[in-house]
Amino acid sequence: MIGVPAKIAISAFIGAAALVLLPAAQAAEISGAGATFPYPIYAKWAEAYKAKTGLSMNYQSIGSGGGIKQIQSKTVDFGASDMPLKPDELEKSGLMQFPMIMGGEVVVINVKGVETGKLKLNGKTLADIYLGKITKWNDPALTKLNPGMALPDQAMAVVHRSDGSGTTFIFTNYLSKVSPEWKEKVGENTAVEWPVGLGGKGNEGVAVLVSRTDGAIGYVEYAYAKQNKMNYSLLANKEGIYNQPDAKAFQAAAANADWKAPPGYYLLLTDQPGKDSWPITGASFILMHKKPEKPENSKQVLAFFDWSYKNGQKLADELDYMPMPDPVVKLVEETWKTQLTGSDGKPVWSGQSS
Image (cartoon, rainbow, N blue to C red; front, side, top):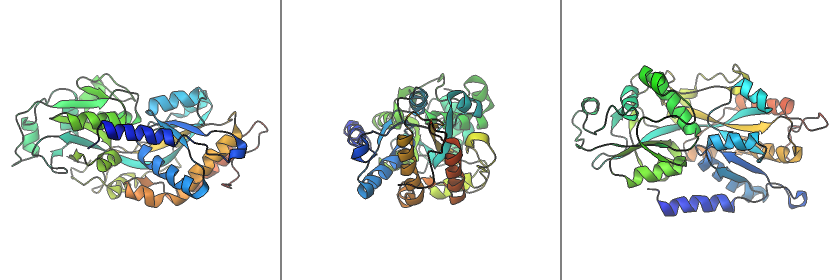
């Protein structure tokens, strides 16, 4: 399980990765900030990209809210968010966005005697836990879903994100779809007024709190749960079926996604139909200025993402992320050509990654 040393290691990696993504002669540092949801795969891609090209990337895993603020204030070359911005928000800030990777969130627990992937939850029960209506692990609502399981007479410690978070947006978007009471009382956003619970900063912070707190329940991106061997629960999908969270289930949730239809790629993948789907699935997005102040930097950022799209699938599979399908990649790269321009009006991206 993740603890302070592991958290320090994550921070150390980020610091070590804060190198130059451009050739030394260009003397420019490429920087990005935002969502913790995709950080594990971005770190893997950055490591592999550096090994191949000698170049690397500085990415601050600070949460989607921070990433949006930093790209809007032009302090980074790209932002990353799990909450896609609506078309009018993009227009107002002079930004474009595109989906980079898809994955799932899981509910993690720390309950003695309950093995990973055994406890069953459904949307209503999960919402009631986060509404503070269910406070003990042996509540009748839980024992009904888990007949024969020895659930303790123990108080729940509810854990949520304390920072502006796309992971929270996806989670609360899901709860708003499955619980009218949650939608009315709390709603969905990167940060909400939580009825109950303890706050942890980042997926890392939530993972630490859940791991250290007996009786805890929280939500994190699946790669964090997998890498840190955390216990997770099963969650009934729209069809009432309990699947294991993995790339197959995330892919099933995204199977009907039509990325061509929504302006600015604004698309949400929670509570999707299909017997094989995982209910809390989402995409993570990259935000960039349409008219960047440093077009050469933006070109090199796109070169990194182009490489990741085309060469990063194996690494994504290992962490149970789902790469964007080839037709979507082609669509996105056409968007790069038409929406990102330098001061001379010429496209920043020509389709060449070098």
